[in-house]
Length: 279
Image (cartoon, rainbow, N blue to C red):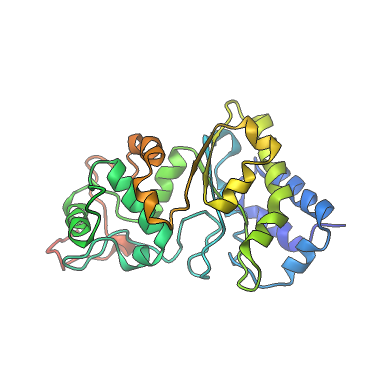
């Protein structure tokens, strides 16, 4: 059977170096479950806007880590096709006096806990005190820091990309009427095919970072044994904030550190007055 054109059009979001592999992955799905992609093309799913393969924007030869979550955010504004990057989030920090992380970040539980984990790993936050007052102090420093902290989720995504992160989900789609594990199972042939191609073409095998039970299923594929692996609970668990393996991995990267000597504008370029800051 022929791959529905709906999915071939979405390949334009991926870097050219990935497209042959992605086509092979789609062909593997068609061979395993011929009805799946044609039915999916007629269904409503997230992410919208042909962003299904947006995570593959990083050139294949620049991938150092493959971070695998479970599935897209279950909200149209949030699901971007890039794992854990919530499209509804602009500013990371609240601009309210006494506020910590911004309201959109707090709404995205996994992103909120990821941020707190990074702050603990960086020594900015005490694991025994991750509450409102401690976060408010960090937010204030972020607004006043003149480059000491990044300000937006877009900057965080850029810094992850610079470190060579491919941010994938085990299931590339979310449908409220379909169990995520069912869609994840359907995408297994795609994932296995794409990862086999990555293993064959990469100069150095990337490290797999598997978050959550659905992602952990992938580690049982024979092919996955070729890759170095780091596993953790899904970030929607509070225990993720204190995960020592995550601290060891992300701490040295300083992902929340701004560009030295470059003041950061507020998200959307707006002036923040609630702290008395004029950017």
